[in-house]
Image 1: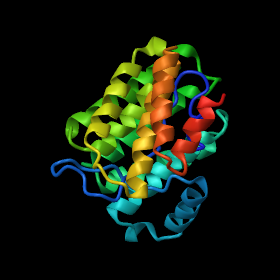
Image 2 (image 1 turned 30 degrees about the vertical axis):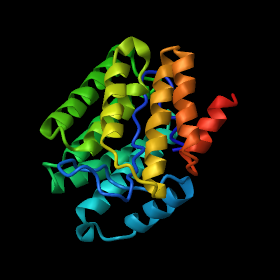
Image 3 (image 1 turned 45 degrees about the vertical axis):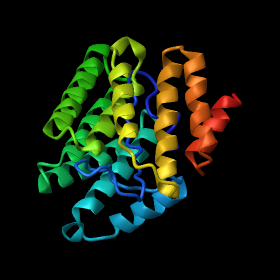
Length: 239
């Protein structure tokens, strides 16, 4: 984002790091919304999409803008509610236009969960937001279990929660589910996506204190030699 380390400081990190390989996915699955991995390209795409009249945006463009603004909000200071508000407005506008899109519903759940990071919130209220966010994430996945964008949102959100919430395992399962269905392609976007999934699962193992398992996943991500996520994996291995 830099999505890797800055998503949630206290209660929960909810992220929208999404990308998708260019190769065809397994026929019946709906691929996650494609976005660039490089932060500079993400910024350019936000500028481009924000400059378009809302009524002219396609579904894919709405999804891309919503994902990118959720990423931007996740990188912001925990006290920066403006970025989160902007992301929430965009997700709500997109969902109003496309109310039956699981990935957009999942993005809404991620935004709600991110509200819990505000250090000014009482703990009870923060936990209520986490539960509300995950209920929406679960509904999004249940709406269409073959929509990998919704499942990716829940997976990323879950693996970055504190272990005491008990969400990390389902996040790992979501990410593995997606990895198992990712096309075996050497196209750069597909390789980058596989590296991202391995990296995120490594983060989950790190959070659980399972250092050897985390290192193995970081090594797998690094070995793919992708531009963004493999580099991040190597940096973790060198910490």
